[in-house]
Length: 207
Image (cartoon, rainbow, N blue to C red; front, side, top):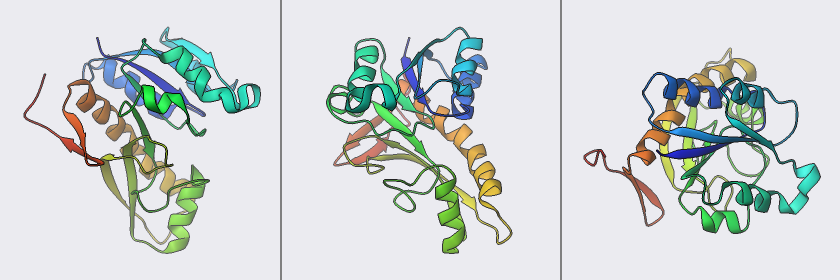
């Protein structure tokens, strides 16, 4: 059984999309654990309701050892780490140990509106202020550069003149909830390979 660890920092709607995909049979994997960045976030409650093991590893408590602590929990126990609305930056040995085995979902079409300090509503606010007509979401692999790992999947979302950042966020989230389980499914079936920094999807190989 393909096992994943999900890291979250908020309400956990992307986590819920993974849970729902597993429950419906669309995704054949197991969420081995959910790691929260702080106490009190609803993502942890979603996990507990499904009997999934939960841990809290806060930057406030562990500081620059946060990534090492996450590695300690996940090494040898999961096949993939999924950042589902996780706001801290992973660094150090975990990026080597889980090379090409960590994915993140970002609420824009990378390489636009991404990088340090671009997260959550800040992204959607920047999109609206820029006047672009399209945005979207991106599932990408995580490496040493923030939001610069190989792009796996993207989905386009229209931006309307009347949009607020909250309305746009909701529209993008709907696509995120489809894209993230799809990305996990592709990886779990060994249909993804990284070649020269780009992700290639092999739809013929369907293990």
